[in-house]
Image (spheres, rainbow, N blue to C red):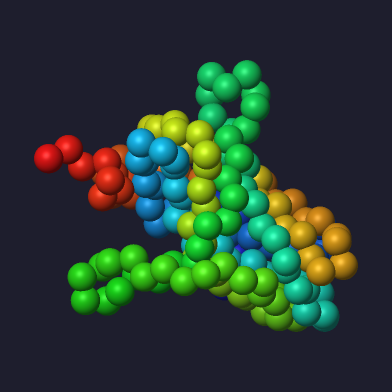
Amino acid sequence: MFALLQQLIGGSRTGDKLDLAVTVDHVELSTKHLVLGLKLDWLNRTGDPIRIQDVGVLVYLDGRKKEPLRFYPLERFARAQIRREIQKTAIRPFTLPPDAIYTEQIRFISQEVLDIPPGTYAMDVQLMDTDNSSYLNQVKFPVEGKVKYRHSEEWQVG
């Protein structure tokens, strides 16, 4: 099932330990920052749980002299069923269960204000576990026009 998810969404494998699939829920541009709302599905291929203490994202954009745009975890999110609003909760450490798929929906923030136009981009998702081991997955992900893009409330002109 996870292999099919990787083919549909875009995913990668890190050695024999982790697979990752990423979908972009939303891209939010304001006058102060850029936010990516991502659904991250990890497959822990080990027989042991992996406790994650930190996660970060690097997005590679054209015209940045090969410098990636760095995103930091902001908050977890879920979509409300009634009005499709985003419900936000604090980010906290999580554990990837052994031999299982684990999903998080996390909003990541960049301190740079940059628009991400529609297209396909390379992204590194970096994990740090509680033993200070680092895991890196590189995936390609699509950003589609208006379907996944919105301005935040503070961007609205009255």
